[in-house]
Image (cartoon, rainbow, N blue to C red; front, side, top):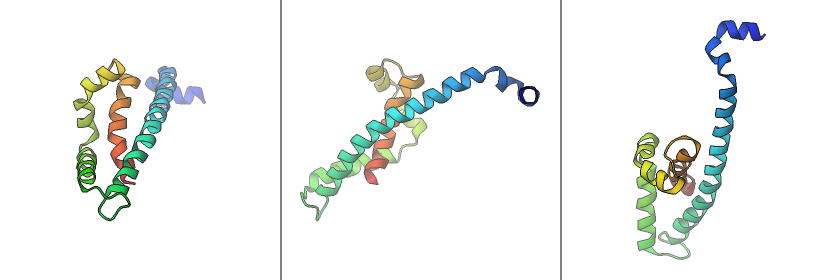
Length: 117
């Protein structure tokens, strides 16, 4: 089986250990970002729900601000957000590339979508 895979895709088989590391880093990145997205998204989602017009704690000013911020970040494509948040990633995580550098943009991109759910 290994001979067949080496014949079909030799470049991939040479870098197989690197793929394992990349898959592990992807899982870690998704888990870390997911935890923050859930917690921050629930807080924003509940806040926007209770402060909306007709909500139990109706606050039009708070609702309007949260609504505009959430809709603004939902409308930005991720790759543009990733490039725009590089300085913030460097400040928070110490780097803008790799596993650590991608977590901050993932959180900021995912929270508005989760809060609207």
